[in-house]
Image (cartoon, rainbow, N blue to C red):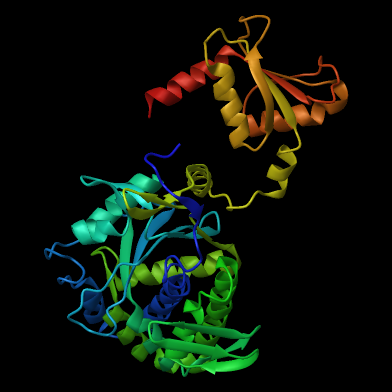
Length: 430
């Protein structure tokens, strides 16, 4: 339910101009950091100092940004901001692009999540506003606090990337080759993109325009171009000829990236190595979805709370943003939930838990008795394997094969007092 009178429509692909195309640059920058550190050249500390330099464009009041480091063997979470200064060092730029990057090298999985710049969120101390207002109101720290509130993640690092560096690095690599799959005609910001299908050699400006194309198809098409571009850049970076350009690449990155004080060259190298072990195929790129609505004459993107909560929950569990094969199998298991614990609300609690595990909960209600101490997972003998699957996913419960076959219900879960006790303990520690 949304507040106020508003017009409702789907977000147009050209609603936010720059959302998405820095996916390529951010991941690519981490690879560059890996190459930079691998050389061990003597002025690494100089470059690090440049990236930590705080001025009006990035730190507002000159404050040093210090964030908590990730615990050992735990995921690390970054906030990435995109700033477009158009190459003017006196221009603080616009923070039109906001992304969250989270990786868990131990589980070999990473995520890059775009947040629409017009997303209506709760900015601490300022109420409900567009998320891109956080940077204008309080600089990087307010952005970090806002993202922490939205996602539930503790942010360990942030980086502000200037679009200008995007073009410079492609030029430093001598350009890249990309196979354009279809005719593209587009124009934006005084730039004209006119491409025929086939292989093209792009310089920095042309490459930037290619991944910024937004009027020829939808978000999926644009993401496909971004991923295609990323592969081309990574392949070129891995060539032996690129090693001779490390110094130049490092210098460009240091001029166009600002980071928190805890993200130094050594740490960047370590993260780059960890990302390399995760593998490009295990980096999941996605965007928070929502509807464009007008509230009080202001246009917002109202984020889909169900999709957002589901995505962040999966990220916390180190699961891919798509259902696994096993989870898809869960959706075919129909479960009836009965409360046998004697504590009100436990059937709904169990139903929500089973739904979060992607089981299909058909209905909930009370059991014939409230004297169940251990949760029972009741199935007919021929469906014992389904009962064991539910037991395995829940992590508790006793499989009881006294059930009868039914076309509408595969499994009956009778909630016992064991689950009620677990729920109480969970609430105490929140």
